[in-house]
Structures are given as structure tokens and as C-alpha cells.
Amino acid sequence: MISLLKTDEISLGNKIESLRNEMIRIGIQEGLTSTRTIQISQKLDTYIAIYQKMLQ
Image (cartoon, rainbow, N blue to C red; front, top):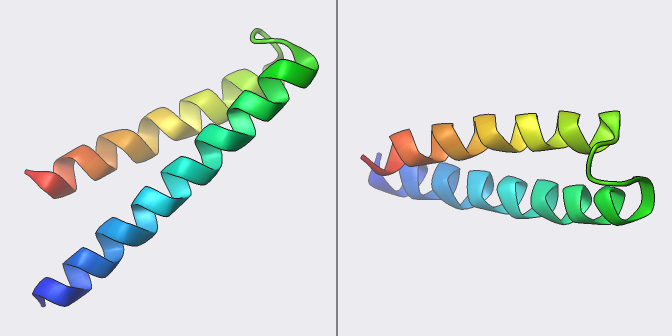
């Protein structure tokens, strides 16, 4: 069970890092207030909140 939780934690961490990189790339290309940048930022916020709950 513990290793499954650790695997989920790592997977979610990788997803967060990927979204962060995507958000930065799109923010540079389209601007920080573009619809796509904001959508990714909101998705990133959701994943970070889930990750923080997992760590508690």
C-alpha cells in the first residue's frame, strides 16, 4: 500500500512539473493572460491542491 501511494505521489509530481513547463511555454508564446495559459494554470492549481492533500 505504501509503495502504491509513493507511486501515485511521483506520478502526480511528474504531471505537475509537465503542466508547469507547458504553462511557462504557452505563457511566453501567447502571453500570461491568454485563455490557454489561464486554463493550464487552473488545472495546475487543482493538481497541486490534490498533491498537498496526499502529503498530509
